[in-house]
Image (cartoon, rainbow, N blue to C red; front, side, top):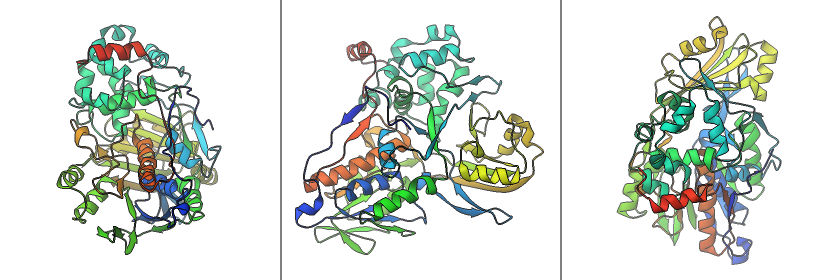
Length: 500
């Protein structure tokens, strides 16, 4: 699997220092609270430099929102359940660097050849076969799209749309964070018919309605996937369930470097102790809080000694996106052979996408070979999920008469919301408390990253922050360019900053 093909990708050098914490005379001890992507990246960054790490995870499994756990179907068959489909894009450099620790060639991934997007009229857009170089990729997508006509390009308000092509973090937040994504799309005359298929796909990745999402966050996503990167718009998925493919091997890797992994162990509070911290019954020199938003808010509220009033207020002000539903069905018959592994939908509430797991996941494929059935997963964002099966039957009529051999439905509300005006108050990796750092996809980092890649990037950055405090060498970070690909547009933006 390619490690990255964009020659303009930026490398942010590692902080300098001694190569191993063992050279300090006393090996520092660090607690990492949260075993999701951010916590695992932070633990890896610290453990690889000789820090004694204890990783606390309240759930019985690692991976956080990209984790998986065992379940059983009514007939007793053991299966692995998760919170649903995750796309590992090829510009997720820091996440891929983490996973390459145990899979250097990323051979545990399978490429998804396409992910069609369909609207209520049956019009379908695809990403396969597009050129990779910006801005030709976006232009080619628009020109071949059945929902984006050539005259729509002429109607776009180029001045107001300029931030999309000139994203620089944090500048784009200064330009657009006062607008919601829906209002921004209207202001630039983006065609209504194409919004479901081109832009709402990105806002739905945050499990948020475009009317609640910061336009700056949407622009950053557009830069990450379309106009800032030459990695292309296709992605990879694990070829086996998340625990087997990703997190169990990484747990073994960390254990081999002395990390004490404590799954099923919650940390109820943190107090200062002897120049460090006490957490989970032990003393540590440093702590990484890599929790989800509800967990971070609870833990800080239960740790009144930590931070300043302003910092604590910023933590308490973090919000979660509306609930989302994942419904997985084990059916007694296959779906049609031409159904894609992943289908996105727009304007077909409550359904946002359909995954056919046996197209790419080994466990599901083996089940379908044994039973002749199929494994289908439905997602509904910002919804209670009522009517999901009806939508499935409309789009995939062959499922209407299928018998359900097993079903699991999850409802969760723990993904961060990035509301209008929230960036200025978003807590960053560093905190007012020496030795205490934050990591996670809700945490501010002034780089062009999002979703799982933001989680991984903040995890590495949190490790680097602590390592720098101790005088130990850190780890490099890599991102798509933190500027527009057309420099003359950047100059135009500086000359005319009021683009909205």
